[in-house]
Structure formats: structure tokens, C-alpha cells
Length: 492
Image (cartoon, rainbow, N blue to C red; front, side):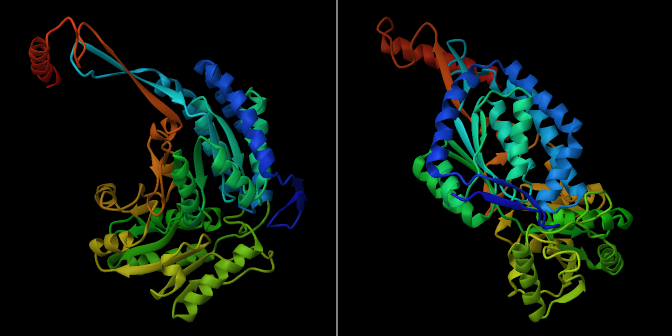
């Protein structure tokens, strides 16, 4: 097969070529992974911890090299690339320390007090398949793999064909940290070939991408009766309450909407601002967006970089143009930036978007946000929840007000006075999607234990619950009854 050519979307530079692997080659990777996983499972958890902590240190030491690669491959700003570097580092640290605790056998309350001793053990599922997206090619390749590896699994990963080099860099870093050969393998190629092969070979499937593709993969996982976790689309709301601190809110909301050029599943695409603060917030926000510095450079000066491709830029432009034809007003942006390159689009704020416009309900996945003025917080909450998605939400208000609003929003993560970073970086808490935004969770205990199978071992002492030749049934029934009565007092 012809190799896959990797090109920088911001500069057009040729970055390299990678192999387009076949289904047979993907299957061969699983054969090697299964052999490696059996040995990796027997590796002491303390040894796994050392490897992950070495990875953590290497990422911090080599971050400039990694940042350059991510930027060249995706076109994103350096600040957005830095988010990826930090995410992988804190994930490695979190998993290094959490895996041993979660894998340790856990005492559980037995069937009968004193007479039953029960414990729960966890074994790795085997070989985890990861299908990673292009928008965070280092973070969402490495971080999902790290969690599975920490729990004793091997991983076969398919990166997006537009951004394979960042995933290969993650593999290099893990190998340098001491991870044994074949425990983590990157197989480059198309979703139609390599992605399908992974879905049909793996023991657990982790996917990040569109809801439509997530449904197709869920059907495969369902037929195979394997575990499946997916972070899918989002149409994330952001609420500005009357008591919001504007000096903090305006720059914070800008970051919530335009980080990674808006190509972020958890970025805000819908703003609901209370009428009491709208006349102050909207002009200040529009001015802040209009003043953003757009560039494809590798320095720290740009507020936003390019989109992933000219084709994606065309899609974003088409959605905005459709809304404008329907009556939407462009408060700023709303245009391509061909002088910078074919993949650049101006950060855009829209108002009066008609409900029949595609971007009113569908994810744009670009630097576009809509603003709507509401008369009450109750209306803001109602509008925020009026979506088939439920990934992330953001509230800007005094902490007490924001917390009350947050608990009424239908989203897996809700950030108060932050766009998305606070919840995402809270590694000990779960993150995922409600409704059409996915199933399963990253982070927290669930983000690690999902890569394991639980085994309950119950050791019964003295007499069997279901009957014993040495104990008459009536005597056994009386004994069990007394034990249950006594046990109730202990539990209370």
C-alpha cells in the first residue's frame, strides 16, 4: 500500500510518511500484544509505577520537542499544544499512584457475618484497542493508553491518519521509559481497515470521535460482548449569571470557546447570558474575540492557530454561512483567513441564530460560538439542557450561585468560573458523556477499573449456606436466621 503522507495544516510543510497498515498487519500486532500482555500482567505494580513516573519526567524534560511536533501536525497554538503535554504528564502521574490501590484485593461484606469472608480481585481485560482522534493527537492517544497499561493491559492504538506522528512520539517516550516491547503498539492506517480490525480483535474498545462513528463501533462491541467506552460529540452550553465577575469572565469565556481553535469536544459553543449583564458582557466579549492574535507560528504569541485542514475549514465556513443566510448576525469573525493559509478561520461570535440553522443544534467543532440573551437563570438552564448532547458545561457566577446552577445541568462535567480545564484536570473524578455524548468514563477510579475484569472470591467457614451434610436443614436455617439478625445490628 502507498504510505500516508503527513502535512502541516498551518504551513503546508511535508512532515513525513507513515505506513498504511493492512488488516492482517493489525491482527499480527494483536498476536504480539497478547504475548507481551501475559508477561506485563505479571510485572509488579511497583515496576509499572516506576515506568510511568519516568514517562512523566521525560515529558516535562522534552516538552519543547513535543510541543513543536504537536503544533506542526495540528496547526494549533502553542498554549493549546501545552494542554496536551500537561494532560499526558498528569495522567501518567495519576495512574502510576492509583493503579496499585485499585488493583489491590478489596475486602467486601460477606453473605453472612463471621461465616463468609469475601474479597474482590481485579485482572486486566487483555489487549485494549484505542482509536484516537486528530484534535488532541498526543493527549488522547497517550492518556487512554497509559490508563490501560497501568492496569496490566497491552494496547493497540490507531491514530487518525492526519496526525499519526504525535502518537508515534508517545510510543517512543514509553519505550524510552522502559515499557516492554509490544505492550503499546501504534498501527497507522484507515479507520475502514485498521479501525475495523481493532474493533474486531480487541478485548475492550476505547474510542474518541463523532457520535455517528461511536454508534457503529458500539454495535460491533455489543455483538462481541466486549467492554466499550466512548467520548463522542458535544454542543456544550455556557451560562453567564448576573453576578459574574466580568474582569474574570470575559477572558475565561474566550478561552472556553476558542481553545484549540474550537476543535474540542468540551469547548463551549452556546452562550446564554442573563439580560441584567448582557449589555456589559457581550460588547466586552466581542472586543476580546476580535482582538485575538491568529498565527501558525511555533511561539507563544498566538491566541489561536489554524484548523486541522482546508476541508474542515470549508465545513465550518459552510455552517456559518448557512446560519447567516437564515438571519444570524455576525458580531465578529465569520470569515476565512486566506492570507494566513487555507485552514485558518477567524474566531466567530453569532447572535440571532435561527433554530433551523444546522449549527443551532449540531456541533461545529470550530471557532464559532452563538450568544443568546435570556431573562432568567431558569430559562438559561432550560436552554442549556435542550440538546441531545451532555458532555461539558460552564457557568460563570459567584461560587454559590454557580454551584446551584451546576447541579441542574445535564452534563458529565460542569465547570464553575472555568471553561473545561478544572473538571478535566481533576484526575481523581470521572469525565465522560451523558446522552449522545458517549458512555463510560475517563479519569477517576472508573477510568482505570473499566480496563479490568472483577473476580469475587467468597470463602465460607463452618457451614455451607446452601446446605451441609453435617448440619440438618432446620438447624442450618435457625443458624442463618440468627446470623442475619446479628449481622443487621453490626451493619447498622
